Image (cartoon, rainbow, N blue to C red):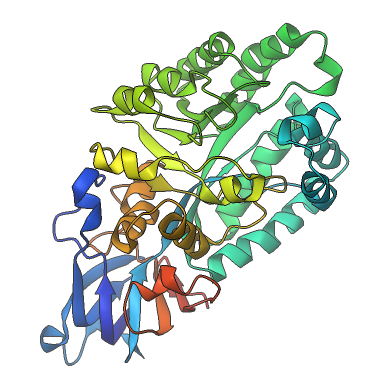
Length: 417
């Protein structure tokens, strides 16, 4: 069965020749078609163009396609969110209050809060309970326009519970229309029981967790929190090397809390992305230049924690690509709203609306290894799109930062909302 969307006010982010990523000055340009149609066959985009070329009687495999009239509305490719921790148990609003009272992220972590707080709650939650809690968040991000998401483990911090998290991620992949990528993040923090023997925990990650994750085929990527107070460059290199032996491509948490060397380590090991980068300068920009590693910025967590803003403007002006992600998690960004992330990128990082759109579609798809199938409106790509409410321009999306402007969601060619 097919689907025709007609009378589209503006079809946003179309590509005749799909690009893997968009860099530097090119990020300020997107291609759109006013007064357009979009034709979907099965789970793929079949055709698109101006309404004057819209088929009068669209037939897919001999059957007339269903029709949606999108008069006055726009169609975007679904958001791709390449950095989340949305599989977690409970919440951490007490830490929110602690920060308001003046405690830092590091001070909260040292008192047993932060990641270790989430680890304790997750260990006490059954796999089914964890799945049900996570599905509430999954349904929320779908309703807000996200069609592809990367989800990390990292709140288990032991073999059994890391595997539990990854099995939940697999269940989400198997039971929803979302495109899901899984990342093993056993090196998220040193658990309390290994506080005085961190080397034993690192050995556990390398010699037990990684082989088991690979054996069960539960992860696409491996990640390490390479930052002050967490994992050193040397520890990170050992863990990434072990992951690479099992076919897990690196992604890195880097430079959120300090100039950790995480960016340089990520580039050295061919990381698909280096994420956070709240603390980065000329050296980090120079190291990233000319590489295949995507700088992925998380303005939601910078806002929530009161951290320095990532240097998006300097990165783009230096010719780098930039992707955006939500960092949806209970401690530093309890929101997966990618439209809000676009707004923060424009308001706080001084990115143009066009740059923000590229950063949540083409470039964020790249940061998940999905360039060939997601991130733009192109023939043969996944039919993951959303239809807006009636809006005056595509720039209205980040401008109206507090409004949900997503009206209809189509994932894998099927209308979900």
